Amino acid sequence: MLLNRIGKLGQRSSVLFLCDMQEKFRHNIAFFPQIVEVASRMLQAAKILEVPIIITEQYPKGLGPTVPELGADGLKKYSKTCFNMLTSEVEEELRSISDRKSVILCGIETQACIMSTTLDLLDKGFDVHVVADACSSRSQVDRFVALSRMKQSGAFLTTSEGVILQLLQDAAHPKFREVCVCLWKIYESYFFYNLLCKLWLLNLLAFGM
Image (cartoon, rainbow, N blue to C red; front, side):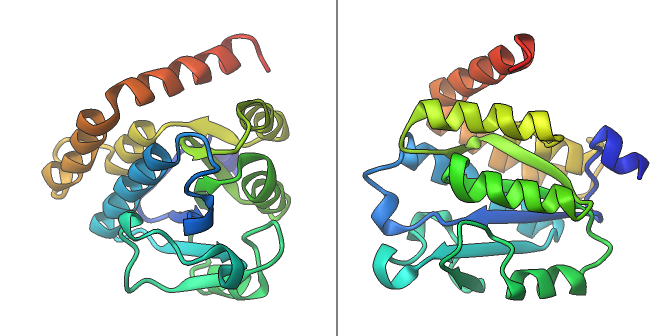
């Protein structure tokens, strides 16, 4: 239980959740290209570090498939209609990797599937890390109120860089150089977006929202 209270991430105790980054959301979600880019780097880092990955799609018949730039080709997608990633199939998958007690969460929309998934995971005893620079909504008011709401409920708000460095733990990690390429690609592609996200997150934390 101590891990849950302090929010420490570990390579062998974590699982990455990627939520509903689909074609029909492309032109409606604020910062959609940036969100997908950051989530793609998280996915690449997870693959390198052999962290399990769970991907969902919200009603793909109507909202389209996962966008190709996420880089999730060949990975299983869990279809759903509920505003929550924890379908019966996903719960079964989680039970099969029962040593994974920390969930790293990216995707859309923050006030809908991200928040509902977070609350249910917390209720089930998981340690939830919401990657603020990899989550968005149509409305930025919804986005930041939802981040605040999840923090109040016990989720940990973090950034892609923070998560990746926690998973690595040490520059002597054998995959350090390979994983760091993911970080540098985020910096090069979306430096100002990431800076803006970190400022927003600092504001949330500083004012206790």
